[in-house]
Length: 515
Image (tube, rainbow, N blue to C red; front, side, top):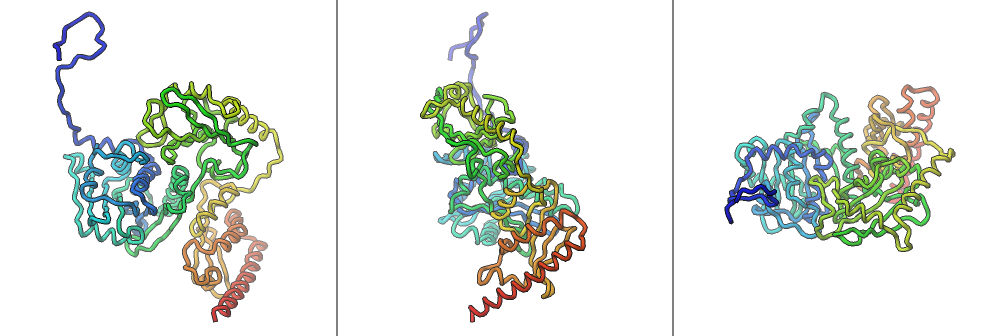
């Protein structure tokens, strides 16, 4: 290179005199723990890795020791990693080739998501052709000299064997220890913490992964596991929450596809929807403030990476609450759309806004006219005063099938801050079918009659959905209204008598058929 010659003119190119390699300081690991990952977004990033590995089953497991939460695991039945692949996955800044359809993007998610919430990250994996192997990052050691522990091979196999219901021939376990949120739980608050955390995780994963969860061959479950007995204290299957999952559109003729000519990308399809006004569905009201959820829903390889927002093209206003637009990012790299590191939003250049101004459907209907129709639909509904309002209820909790729970929450407005109602089978006198604990929000069911609702089927914690759904509808008010009354106590005595008789009849019919 030619030597620098001083000049009074502006230097458009910065003169250089050579180059040198400056590897990151070990303190760089500490910066990974300050990426601003929310808890739900961090878990979603781990599930993304499972999807990229071809997993069909993913389990998020909270390990509980009495009142303490000791660890969190994400287990999948994906293709797994051998030792060489593990080293790459655990290397800060490690280079990895992503498939064109991969959800992974920057190669930092596993480390940044995990160390944002835990002091120790362990990854154990096996493939069809390689034995179980593991690596562990401890923030303290990594900050000193980038030391990554090699996990004992015997322990790796033991942990894989522990979860052989998920991992059969191949799979991966991500383990978090020293989870900082767990250490904030005060005495007696573990159940409440778990319920809140799992509810938020259900909503986040159900929304951002809804296209994957709609498939019959992909499932994500959340369990709470006793660390000693391995008993499942809670088990919930994640249901998809489709942000476009209304039953009837809010306006005839929708959804409608608009095409935006975006410079540097080409034609970008915009699938515009108008939600039905005042919808009670969780997919409309239960995923955040309505003003935040209007606008663009942007997908990358079927994974939702932005749930609402106008990307600077306009401001959120209440009369646009019914407007939601689905956009699938172009599969080829471009200079217009860029994904955030945490995969929680998309940055766009002004070229996108210019394309929106020219967007139109096949009949020449403009995107601006769509927004006007969404606004008109909202305003017309606001003027109508015939809406029937349902009473707010205490939410359903453990023991109710997730699909039934989702329907109840879609149909009934929920009281905020109330402990959910749990259903449990317990030993009770033969002349009692159910009882309630108003203080703990528990409906106790007599396990003597459980067979009447399961027959030869395996009885799980979320069994008998018809029974539990009906009991929830008739008993919920007893928790909400507090103290009992003579009339309500008499109602429950009547229901107990009828249900005991009905259950005995059902068991007798089953025994006769079996004999």
